[in-house]
Length: 208
Image 1 (cartoon, rainbow, N blue to C red):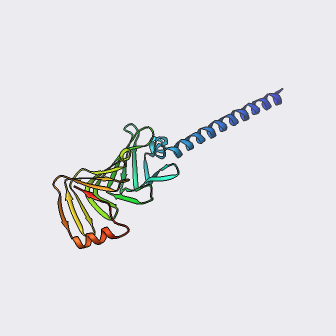
Image 2 (cartoon, rainbow, N blue to C red):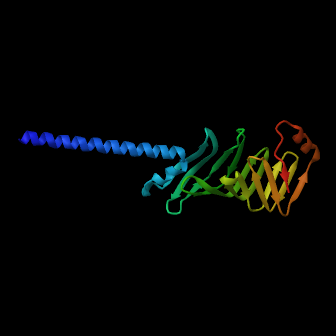
């Protein structure tokens, strides 16, 4: 009788362990699928003691195409606010032709909704490299819904044959347009600018 009870107990334990293993595997499978669909969701599964990450990297893939990619030396995530602070961010936006707009700064603040990145603000020594131009300012905001980078503070633009300065700048990434708003100052070297426009890889148009 004692052996029979021991066998029954062992069988019950094995059945319980099998059920637990299956449940854990199923949960991990669903979590992996969810993170693959929305990479930023990975931050929600961090335990409270692991809210600081080293060598941060996230990317958005849409219909097999990489839309954007973000690297950082360090990331801190705040669950209640749905925000993440990235140190030394390097942000790359890839348009449909595979061309890249690169933005760097001292830190980035990410605002997240339930599914993905809602807005990103980069602060401190911000530099945007786009279509042969280098844009410099103290802040740049990436708005995914509009495929737009907005530099709300005074910004300088340097390209071959042209130097511009304005109180605000808007970059339409897919349309490849750079627009300066208010208090625009310019310095143009017509010969260099004409040469740049005639080259196969001419830069994006700029509007005041």
